[in-house]
Image 1 (spheres, rainbow, N blue to C red):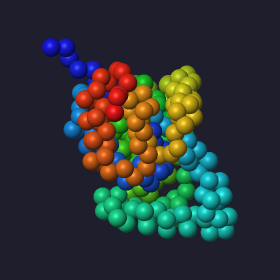
Image 2: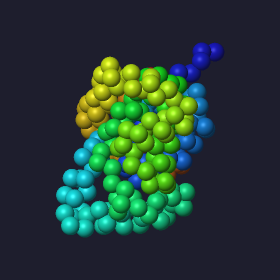
Image 3: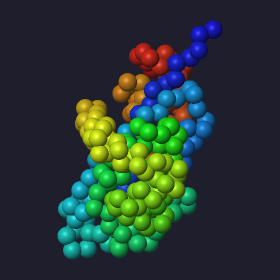
Amino acid sequence: MAEQTAAQVEYYSDLLCVWAWIAQPRLEEVLVDWQTRVSLQPRCIDVFGDAHEKIRSKWGREDGFERFANHLHEAAAGHPHARLHDGLWRTVRPTSSLPGHLHLKAAEAIASPAQALAYAAALREAFFVNGEDIARGDVLVRVARDKGLDAAGLQAEIDSGRAQAALAADLHQARSERIAGSPTWVMNGGRQVLYGNVGYRIIRANLEALLREDPGGASWC
């Protein structure tokens, strides 16, 4: 009997997106429950590439950071696992998610997929729980070292331009696939797209439907 091909799944997210932080346990559950049956490709999307302008333009020039912080706490209130530091966007204001995304692309090049995903989770925890500015290079490097990653190897990928090229490819792919935001699951060659605060049972149902079909071909459902 031929071995079944793993279903290809792309997972788009922005490190500074609270909904991706809320969805983190669902991502981890997929990785545990589906293991070799799903091939997960993490991709970065530019939601908070210019974080300060985004918040000020949408939430207000004068009190936008405070209003946005209040919104985050309201969003996370129904999700007890998604702890939030009280200083998020009030006193801790990363300028951009792109430095973190650049380090993630470097990590994907020098480490295993599991290590790179663990690094992404640790960066999210550093920001959302510990209130650290993950736009800062020193924070990114310290968290990488804490997760057992080679900081010199990461910097070599960045210095060579390879990490930038990988990040540019993700952002181009997001535009090509018209990804609306973070987080977004893309399955079945773009035929199944789940965006936003989607429950695990919905994700599981989509994966089950995909795996019932030929993961490399078009689904009839």
